[in-house]
Length: 296
Image (cartoon, rainbow, N blue to C red; front, side, top):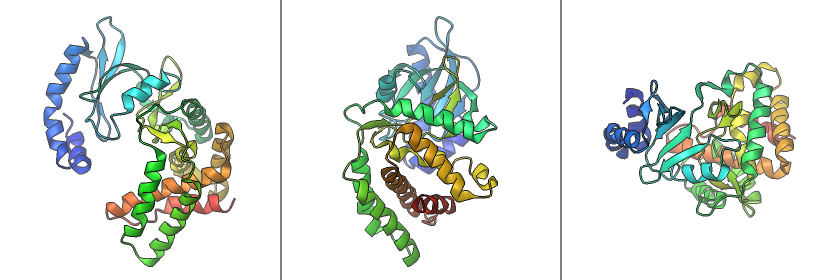
């Protein structure tokens, strides 16, 4: 059990975190036995997940992903099954009761963050995203309409100063303009460069979805603000942000006005989370992205 993973569970899962991490060794043993697996390398972990490289009974490589069952994780197996490996890691088996997934093995040490050319990385990511959002969302997923309604209800309750209040109100106004048509596509919700890994079946594949039914315009922000140093290095943040935005909306076939609204909605979501955590509502990178999009 990596100590860093245990600490992250205490931070993000609070009371449930220590109980789950205490159960992890037993869970790993059960899943290894259930699927006839043997460990084939060192463990890797994310914020709340543990991934073990394994070999199946026939000697083929795979990855065992162990995670608690939460609102975010419980839909991962069904959506990976819906994508059937088209642009995303292939689901080999799952245990819905425990949240455990058996996945095709990808190269955990090589993500799109490793590509020297951030423009090439963005084109690859957006190409994958276009394939993912072409699939209708299966029944039972959280909907962007519900997410938007929750954000709009939370804005008046947020305890902030006058300047932050104006910021939140502006973002909320943008969400109101698009919330009437929340969309029905299968969204990844967290597709940034670190969540695209190199593979053998395909050169690059998406991992770790946080599934949501909605408008693909809600998917753009992670790719707009990742590798921000590359944006700053151009010397013109506004133009660089708009180039990224225009590439993504063109490849995805999105209405740019609605995509602006949903991207501002994603910024609102992050701002509300920041306020909950005691951080400033205004993230400088998000401010720069919003300014660029509103100037187009």
